[in-house]
Image (cartoon, rainbow, N blue to C red; front, side):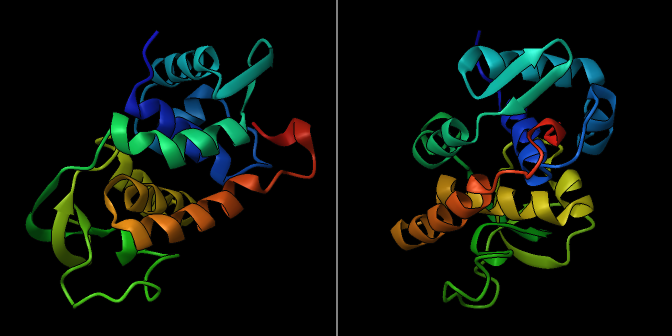
Length: 181
């Protein structure tokens, strides 16, 4: 079973909202995916050890494994492809939490090409085609995806900062372990 980029999008969405319970349908709606695509993503994530499913219909990300994969593996498995300057949604060091922490010339910060975006800069390919839509609707997910892009395409300083922020975000455990989904 091979992990796909949308599997990581599903995992990051759930990790961004640890106390929330998710159904495959609500996750699919939030990520612009079908419920069956989300179910298949969860199945692959469990098979790869990035999620656990203690009971039928229940699952949660394995945060330490997810962190290790995001920090050390994603840039090799799904590298971000740079593109021409366009209007789009800020990502990497152009979005929170890295904006202002990395010195950048105006118009240098990367974006995901998107008509609803409010910034202009060089484009980066998103992890998955629906990621910009999902990020616009969810600031917590947007933060994680922006950090992920800094890890996928950033220089050493950007990757080091993104690693610190990602570690903090994925180390936060919900108070009620049963409320993770």
